[in-house]
Length: 69
Image (cartoon, one colour):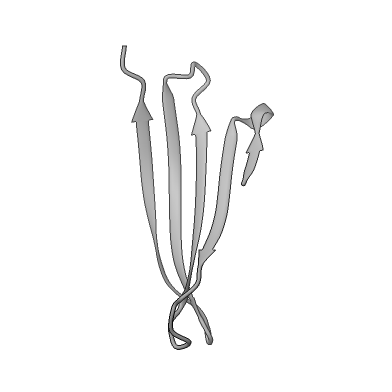
């Protein structure tokens, strides 16, 4: 986990190991930034499969949280 207050960035990287030896490792990278006025939190979550032969498929999820009045 990395938090850089001067750039408004919070980042976390972690891996989920498979139970079986044949399974793929799943790597998750999350990044979140707060808007200048503090009303929005914008995030990106990338989930990637990593097998013995190298990187497998992945997907990206874009998240947006808005502060309610």
